[in-house]
Image (cartoon, rainbow, N blue to C red; front, side):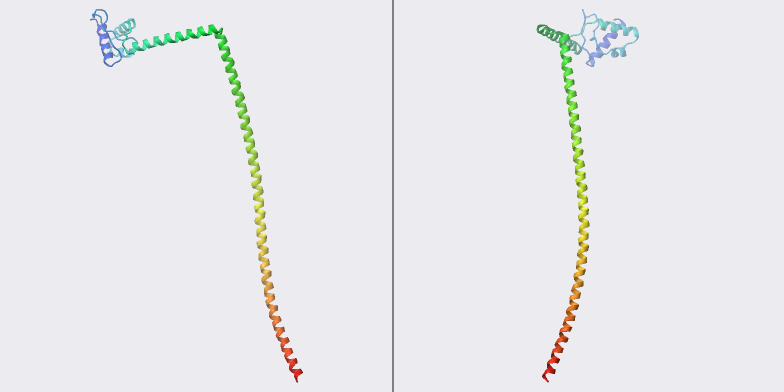
Length: 213
């Protein structure tokens, strides 16, 4: 077994051991085991002894057929199935367009017209929304100004009421002082009247006594 064949076998075994690939015997069994193509090449580079052996490994990998039961082989099978499905769908779409008399340019034109219409509606909606927002802000500003004016009027009226209340309290104090003064004068005059009454009574008594004599 040559150096590169031995290297290939070791690399394939290492990859199979970590689950990256599956390997199979090729031909009559005298050929080396072959790893799946498309695996990371850096893995092989780690096991290569020199550049020549590494290149031979790469050549063998590129020329080999994908193993069908490997993860990469399953991926390729799914990829091919998907390509077939997409191709069939594309053919169906093309057939439908052809049957309807529409061509690709016509479809693109219709899509462009629809897009332009949607953009125009979006601009109109945005403009209307901005105008409504501006109107709402203006209305709120007017209401705020009105409330500020009313608050200022209420504050002014409150100050006037407080001033009037102070005046009333002052007048009340003056009236109370005047009432007290009048009460004092009444008491004083009442005392004077009592003295005069007593003096008059004494005079009457004296007169009566004089007349009785």
